[in-house]
Length: 362
Image (cartoon, rainbow, N blue to C red; front, side):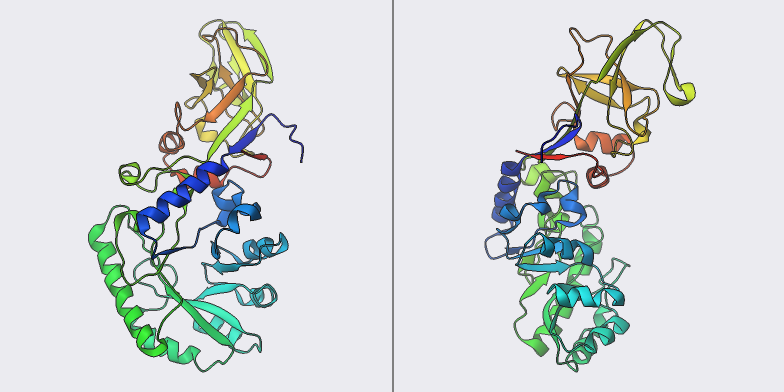
């Protein structure tokens, strides 16, 4: 597809491959990798590139429709849905040969009514407080599953809630999970997929009972916790970029944007950049965010609009229409800096860049 819009997300596929190799080295070759490519691969759209994701035997998504989209684009390898599906999605699960996480008794009964083979991973609720069976039910739940001849137990897993900062709580979660795995193995023998660790778990804890890791944010080269880059060398995968499409000079005491939230204090050169909150540029950056033009930070002035924003470029030399504007470049302005200024996390900034923004793969 030819890209004509001046606003794009640049996605570096070589950086992604580098991160995969670094994570594998860190975790050890005995650990199989299941990359988490939910939410359009954290907003990068790498999930649309079969040439990249075909390098993995299994990938993880969050919802059934994400798995269906992968099948429709021709991905034939195993897909695992991390979250408990809904009964109305069973037809899609069967038709597209999707492996699912299960922890609900009622849903288990629904899939047990089917004649088709359905592969599942049992989710153990060790302290996330979201989904998962009570660890004390592990034996009972497995015995219940075994009554259904069409259900194949391919894995067992849990979610760590606080692996970025709470060592004591995480160790309790892991101990609880290990106990469940032990019980499961006594009944089932070897289990194909045993997993507990997303990015923070991979970096901060060793779980010897597992044979699979599921990296997310670190695949894309961004911090999972404050010590990420002390432990592993990663390359940020994406940059958010636009261009100046309009320039004007206004006098002192001129209001800029909706609500007149910014009034110039001097003669000001104002640049208009065509990316706004409908594209994922947060309105919270109004009058406090910065962007990069000609290698220098310049302030966002006025309220961020649905389709664009304004910046003060008075102090830049030779600025002109067509100059590149980076929202983040991973150097002068990082994704983490933007997240911090908005009191959120880098995950949220990445995955809320909308589909109006073309992704350009490098």
